[in-house]
Amino acid sequence: MEETAMVPIQPYSFQYDGRLLERVFDTYRTTKVEGRGTLSVLFEVDQVAVGSKISTQKISDNTLKIRYMMYFEEFGDIRKLQRDLKQFLYKEKDVPIVFQDDPGIYYFGRLSKFDEEDITISSGCFEGSYEIYCQDPLKYSKTKQSGSQITIKSPVETTPEKIEVQIVRGSSIQIKNKMTGKIIKITGGSIYSGNTLVFDFDQGILLVNGVDKTAIIDLDSDFENFYIHRGDVLECNNGVMVVQCREVYI
Image (tube, rainbow, N blue to C red; front, side, top):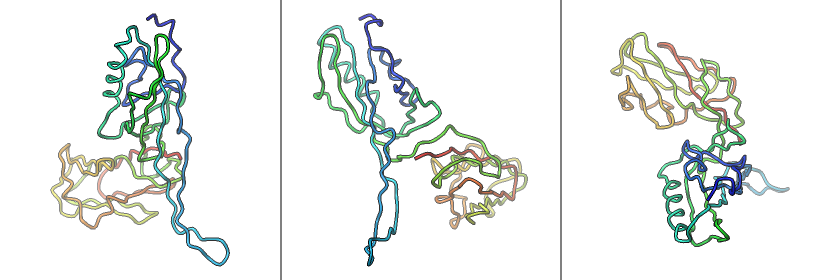
């Protein structure tokens, strides 16, 4: 089927794991997306004499609901087109999702539902749907680089993506958030002058010159809950520190 007979690529089409679906499958078109702006805030409340009192607040997970259209030449092509699409979408970890009309914002999710039977067939094309589950409902900017002063704008606390330090002396290091008091430290570990340390918060590991050395982080460090906010100041007592982080949006 000629490209001119197809629906144009829509502004809300999206890249999934770095690839635009309409480029991966030239007969595919995204026709509708729901859930991009959904925010569900959950409260736990205690009943009081008048009304209630919120004790905890959290943001719920989210699901993107996608409707799509695929063109075909032979009726027997439909099952193969569905299988190919489903196999591309299936992932065992969350992947970045970027919409064409908002290219600076990243969602993270993976396929959670795809029903081959739930389709509508018309002349030369069929329509169906699938869902992408976002266990993390927040949206993120591209990675930005910061020095000791955190300048990202985020309404909720977040962790850095990475903190990289080239140390100037062995064998200890301490990184402290002066605003929260949280500390990451290595005391007497196997690190030496000139080593490059990368604290990777996404993976929860420490790399020393590219080698996993997570075990040398002091057990009383706040590595798993080292949060940052706009205006925080990070202090490193050994070497030059570069902080990589993303702005967070709800």
